Image 1: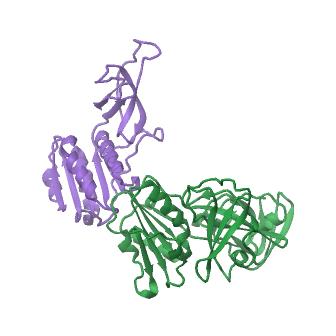
Image 2: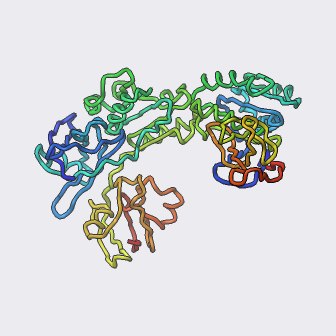
Image 3: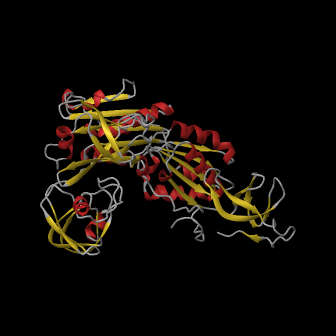
Length: 200
Length: 312
């Protein structure tokens, strides 16, 4: 399997099966960071996928832009962050027809949010192909204050909105594209387990 | 429940509409578009039970309406409805069940009907119109005289009629291409139409979850065969115009069912021993399960061979 392999967990935890070509159909491809490698492997396996492809690329400090453009997509766009490319993604989804394939590669936070945007736009879950590349950092929603903390790398972590210490759960919201964080010391205030690094 | 036939109205030479009401005028349970009822027809020793899609308004409990196509080569259920049922008769009608409901998460609904397959969509159009949801309906028939659905369809711009012998046969790829994201397509009609829609959908990259279908399946007649029921310690002969399920019922064996058309899975029965070939006619078991001959759907499937022993 291409991309990161995660420890098997509850059904709610997303799995990223790796990009699989849906052939020469219209496609929206979003790659973040090392996720660009997944698009390169996809095009190497089936060059026909690029003919009607719209690539949206967030380099995130990597230098894969020129290589992605060299794959010959129908459209190529680069932006610094997900919020910066979201208007373009939403316009592309709004203009898309049934049969448009969606390929997403990058970190969990990006895959989760782009998947949520696509589902909200009416894309069927079966039309979305995903592959994880990059660190194991998570996008976490605090179930208490509802605020979302990006790039969480420790368990427990401190909610950036309300300051509670939150236990990192595998329980995932597809609507929000975020995992759920639950107060770790609700029963025994002040007794907070030692922080550990989140691993795949 | 026993319902009274309130009206019998021919829609075309082959299709007749029946309206059922409660004998005391009581309101009937409401339903959702695509739901069917099973109508019981006492025919001599046996009770025939056929499933028919409801074509009346799902939110109207004053009566149930069905449209029945006369199948002269069928097992006799539709012929019974056409020749033996008259206004004022009392017939057993089951509660509505829906195995072909709309996926209300869809952004748009594309409904494709072939022939009498129009029936579930008549109620769905009423539901979609009431919910103000985007839809389009394509109704295909061979000729205008056979197109009984025309009498049931509302005059709406979303309704498209394709009459083959007038030269405007429907092109499945044309119907499915260019549909907005979030569209679901539903097909009801002959197997050929369902397969053509599935093929076109696959070629255009539609996910399977967005393609729905219902083939109206009546138990096919066939050669008589013998079956042994291990738990009941009985051996029965299934007649040529009888389904295995009907034979079980006639023998007083308790057998579950819901759709009686090979799609819902309720009647699935384990095969303990099979020397011969099961004629699988259902859409429930997958190809591997059918080949294994360890399960049978008694509502539509038959058997040819030495002996068949069921866990029933």
